Image (tube, rainbow, N blue to C red):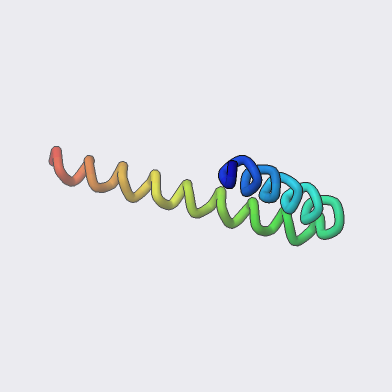
Length: 52
């Protein structure tokens, strides 16, 4: 039950954040995307160096 409440709370927060602060929300999602790309590049470099 608490997991369901936290999930709906998170969804409500995201909708509120996107609706009332769209520029800030876009910046946050852009930074998260860049971080994921950096992690993927790091993992790729690790395996490339491991094989070489």
